[in-house]
View 1 (cartoon, rainbow, N blue to C red):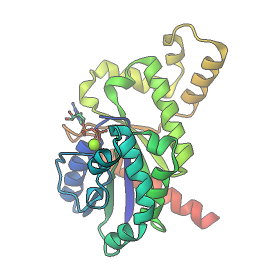
View 2: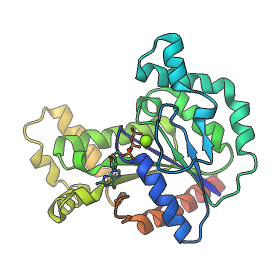
View 3: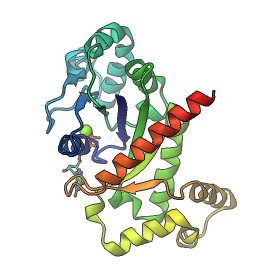
Length: 249
Ligand SMILES: Nc1nc2c(ncn2[C@@H]2O[C@H](COP(=O)(O)OP(=O)(O)OP(=O)(O)O)[C@@H](O)[C@H]2O)c(=O)[nH]1
Ligand SMILES: [Mg+2]
């Protein structure tokens, strides 16, 4: 068994992916357990096996402390620290092949704050966990957004310190030419010429981002259920590498 945390910016397609990927796994004779870690979500397309809303309710915190939607989500995550025991009790008997974790789009919980990392560490504890970082295809197709999204992907990787797979979601929204263009950006330096005039620091930063990308991005579409087999393969590879690294330590 292993955990797959699904992170990404607001609306990147995390919830839709968790739903579609769990069906794909079922079709491949693999069992999945779904955790909803978004305390503010109102409608879910799947029935969660674990629902954080039963432990902390962002909406009641918002009314009680007069918080806006972002602040109430941050407060909900901070509160989860004191609910650790309750969370662990819920997970005691989970033995499905893969646990899919749907997370909120407030990316700062995972990029800048300790609460996101703390919660994932608490949940997975001694079980392997891989972070899937979803990048919305319709944003990634713009050269400057592409670079800043991958900077964010690196930021998440740095903060969470977990094995991470970067995924371009909603690839059905791209034309074949656009997919080829992004693939070329991932492989080489073409993107640098498309970024226009940049100061020296930004250029070096963009170069570093590009150099660290090769072969590490997967295109998926949850509506078309495409790219899932490749993604599953990448998860298994990442898991094997992670275990290998741990054996070496
Ligand atoms: N075309 C297309 N649309 C998608 C795909 N996946 C998700 N969407 C749409 O993108 C929108 C956001 O999807 P969600 O799954 O709610 O995204 P999310 O990342 O969970 O959003 P938050 O939890 O609010 O951050 C919805 O309108 C989905 O129907 C996809 O593969 N293709
Ligand atoms: Mg969602």
